[in-house]
Amino acid sequence: MAEFLLVFFLAVALGWPLGHYLAAVMRGAPMRGDRVFGWIERPAYRLLGTDPAQGMGWKGYAAAFLLSNLAVGVVVWVVLMTQAWLPLNPNHAPNMRWDLALHTMVSFLTNTNQQHYSGQAQLSFLAHMTAIVGLQVVTPMMGLALVAATLRGLFGGRANSRGQVDGGAAAVDVGNYWADVLRPTVRFLMPLCLAFSLLLTWQGVPATLQGGPVATPLDAQARMKEQKIPLGPVAPMVAIKQLGSNGGGWYGPNSAVPLENPTPLSNVVQMLAIVLIPVAVAFMVGPFTGRRKFSALVVGTMLAMSLATTAAALWSEAWSSTAQDIALMEGKEVRFGAEPSALWAALTTSVNNGSVNMMHDSAAPLTGLVAMANMLVNAIWGGVGCGLQQFLVYLLLAVFLAGLMTGRTPELFGRKIEAGEVKLLAVLALLQPLVLLGLTAATLAMPSVTGASNPSFHGISQVFYEYASAFANNGSGFEGLGDATAWWNLTCALVLALGRYPALILPLVIAAQLGAKRAAPEGPGTPQVETPTFALTLVAIVVVLTLLQFMPVLVLGPVADHLALMAS
Image (cartoon, rainbow, N blue to C red):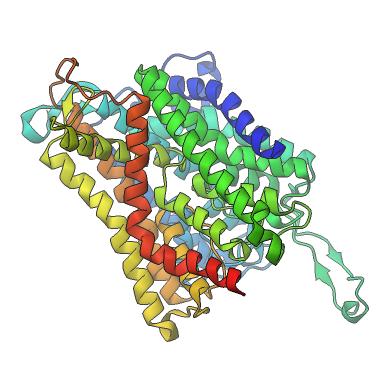
C-alpha cells in the first residue's frame, strides 16, 4: 500500500510542474533554453524544409503525420530484414522474416511495442538503437503533437488564409506538425530520458555496447556448456520504453529480468516513469488551453478511474480469498511479490505502456479482467497524447448524449456538435468492437490455422487480450499463444494500425470542424462540462461504451476462468 500511494503521489507532484513546462513547449513560447535547444532545432527545420511559425490546416497536419510514419516505417522494415548484414551485431542476430519484421515495424511505429519475437537475441544493437529506440523516442511525440493540434482546433485555433474547410468557414490553423514533434522531443523527452537512464544505471541496469561475458553454469549437468550473459545499452532503452509509454523490453521477460529491473527502487522508478508523462499531459491541458477547470476535469476523472482499477487489481491479485487460496505466485518475480506485480499490471495497462514485471498470463483471472478493461477504456491516462485524444472522444460522446437526454442542442464550449461530427464519433465508437470481436471469433473458430493454444476459458482471454492490447496500442500480452506466425503477425499488424491512426486523426478532424464554427456566447443554457456531475456522466459513458458492449467475451473469458478456479 505504501508503494501504491508513493507512486501516485510522486506522479501527481511531478506531473503538475512538468505539465506547465510542457504547455509552454507546445505553445512555442519564448523560453530560457531557446539559445541551447536552437542549436539542435534550427538545422533540423532546415533539413525538413519547414518554418516552425508556419501553421497548417488539419489536412496538411494529418498528411505530414502520415507521410512521416510511412517514410520511417519503410526504413525500419528494411533495417529489420537486413540486420544480419549491417554493423553493430555482436550477438549475430539473423535477419527477420518479412511478416515478423512487418509486425515489429508497425508495432513500434504505432507506439505499441507488441513483441512477437523474444528479447535481444533476435535484434542487433543497430536495430535496437535505430529501429526500436528511435521509434520509441519519436512515436510518443507524434501522439502528443496530434493531441496538441486537436486542442488548438477544439478551442478555435487561428484563422489563416490557406483556404476553406467544410461549410465555407476559414480553415483553422492547428499548428506546425514538425515543430510539435521536434520541440517536445528535444526540450522535454530527451532530458527526462537522460535523467531516468542515469538513475537506472546507478541501480545496476547495464549500459554498454559490449556483447556480454560468457559464464560457466554452476549446475554440474550443464557445466560442460557455456552461457552467454547478454548485455547492451539496456538502461537508455528501459528509460525511453517507460517514459514514452512504449513497453518493449530488451530481454524477453521484460522488467521481470534482474538485469533490466534489479532492485525494489528501480521497480518504483520504472513504475513512476510509466505514468509520469501521461499525467503531465493531463496537467498540460489547463495552461495550454487557458481553461483550468477543464484541466481539473481531465485530471480528476483520469485519476479516479486509475485509483479504482488499481485497487481492484491489488485486491484480486493479493488480498482476495481466491488469491490466497490458490497461492498465485507462479509467473511472478519473487523479488517483488504479488502486490507490486498487480500494481505494475494496473499501471502499465492504464497507460498503454505494455511492459511487465510479471507474466500477465499467470495473473489471477480478475486481474486479467482489470487489465483488459483498462485497455478497452484506453483513456485512463492512456499513452502519451493518444490517451488524452481518446478522452476527448468520450467527452464529445458524453456531451452529445447528455444533450439528447436533456433536450438541448449538444454543444461544447459554445460550438454545436452536429451530424458531421457525430458520424465520425460513431465510426470511432463502432470500430473497436467490430475489429476486436470479429478477429477474436475468427481466431477461436480456426485453431488449426491460428495456433490458439488453450481451448478453455483462459484461451478466450488469451486471444481477446492479444487483440485488445494491439488495438489499444499497449503491447502487453498473456503470452500463452504461439504468436510468431503469419496469422498473428499480419492480423495484429492490421489491428495495430486501426487502433492508432483513426483514433488520432478523426478527433483532429472533428476538432477542426468545431473550431471553424462560430462560437456562441456561453449562457445559462450552455451545457456545463467542467462540473463533478458531468464527470460522473462521462465515467458512466465510458463504462457503457467500453465494458458493457464487451460483457459477453469478458464473462466467457476471465469471469468464467475465475469461477472455474473457485470451483476447483
